[in-house]
Image (cartoon, rainbow, N blue to C red; front, side):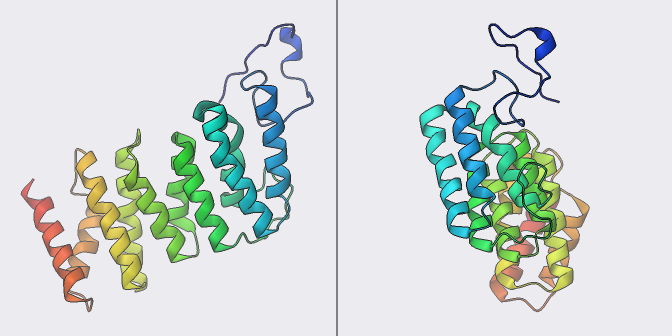
Length: 227
């Protein structure tokens, strides 16, 4: 739970009260201009227009440079997570509204730019539950591209996703991208022999995939067993 910060001239009894500003941002934690930008961003994300939603995500990326990553994590991460999570606890958007794939891909990249544990949790969630294989694989590769504070959680998420993709007979392109992410993440964990990952590698090695994918799976499996 995020601690509420006191600001000069604000009595302690008033901290929890509603004020003019985004209610997902703790009082006094960011500058007033960042609060205003957050409200503008929310309005665009609520539009249900892919063009306006992508504009909003572009605003966040540029604002990281202008106002700093720490402030933008507070102001923007909850909005992007809400957009991808489809729970709409912040955005006033009907449940069941579908955000298109290009917008979801951009949102994943914005989360990777923002960084931090809440952003990575959403990346893991997108790997687990997104309906589009491009999104799942992209989220996995973003997890692998930037070190995080919970490498085991990232590694297990990708290993589980790889096994699901094999069992569902998903495209070889998705399998290859998940395999790449798992290989990269394996260098960051203490116990690399995660059973679902090992199982997926065995199935790929003996499956009807291209020879290059089978060789990669066999090589990875041998590497894991040697350490």
